[in-house]
Image (cartoon, rainbow, N blue to C red; front, side, top):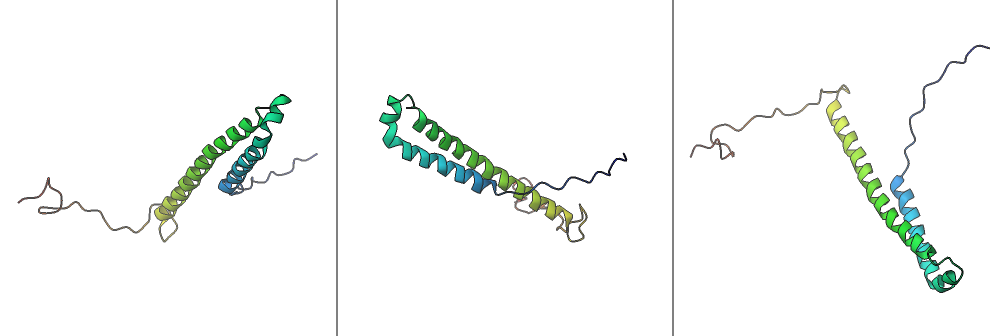
Length: 115
């Protein structure tokens, strides 16, 4: 049987990670609030740690939320830097920038200022 040609892998789907992790974190805190009034009954039946597990899940969700926001911002910065480096022609390294020149003589740099 002939081998079928392999197709290139599709690009990964972008998901709103912040919303997903935020929703899960809210659910953990809601579960904690819902179980807290029943803590005595849960303890009597050997499940007294359930509210605290929910609280730990909410705390870990806050850490995950911080991580996802930092990751999202880093990706946005990377894409902005990449777009800035491509310039108007679309090829890397051809961005039109003003040349950087060092201040001369009586510039703002105290080391080169001649008073």
